[in-house]
Each structure stands twice: as structure tokens, then as C-alpha cells.
Amino acid sequence: MSDLKTRPNDASVEAFIDAVDHPRRREDARTLLELMQRVTGEKPVMWGPSIVGYGSYHYRYASGQEGDWPIAGFSPRKQNLSIYIMPGFEKYEGLLSRLGKHKTGKSCLYVNKLADVDMEVLEALVRAATTEMKRRYPC
Image 1: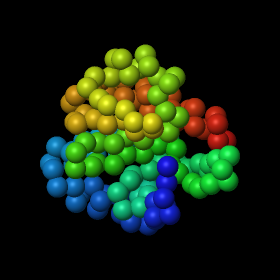
Image 2 (image 1 turned 135 degrees about the horizontal axis):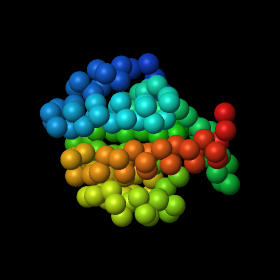
Image 3 (image 1 turned 45 degrees about the horizontal axis):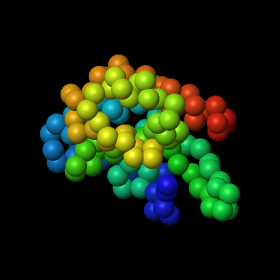
Image 4 (image 1 turned 30 degrees about the vertical axis):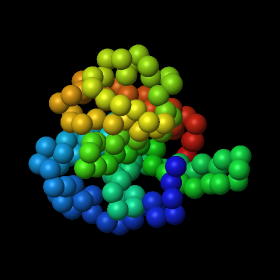
């Protein structure tokens, strides 16, 4: 899930987004920045060099591996927007079926551009996932 380099830091989220090369991806990142802050109620923080994260939780696996990771986040990658939905997608099939064009990994939602998805459904998905993470990992 996280490696030793992916830690919260003091780098500027705005500067990171301003440096995104592709204009549409940069605008989409600004939209996600606002949406996720509003939905999570958390301020954006850079995690490592390329992830904008909101809040955090501490995990511990049965193997003994443990660490910290954002409750929600995103990264405007070269290939797509990676949106971190940390509980995974098992509980959210209904929302995903209405979302629009996307792909999923274990906890990543991949979107080429926000114009491909229903923003109300995306907001509902981020809200549900954030609520679930805060339930699982109360402060």
C-alpha cells in the first residue's frame, strides 16, 4: 500500500497542481482538490512527491507491517487521474455502475478525465468511502 517514501510532507499542494503538464489534467486536479476537501472535511496535504491526501489512518497487517496512509486522495498521473478509495469497491458496485467511464484497482479508481464521469456519483463515492474509513479508523 505505502512505501517508505510516501509520507505526508510540507510541499505545496498548489505548486504541485500548477506543475501538472497537461492543461485538462491540471484543471481536473483543481476540481478534485476542492471536491475532496469539501467531502472529507480535511485539508489537502502532499504525501510523497505525487499524492494529494486528505486525513490519515494507521493500518497494521497480520504480517506485522504497519504504516499511515490518507483516508482519501488523488494523483494526476500522466496516464489518468488516480483517485484513492481506500475501503476498495466491494460495497460500491451500485455507484460504480452509474459513474461512467473508469477502471478500478484494489483501492484505486482510474479516470481519464472528469468529463467521463458523473460528478454527483463521484462525490457520493468519495463521501461513502470517507465515512467508511472514519468508521473503521476513528480518531
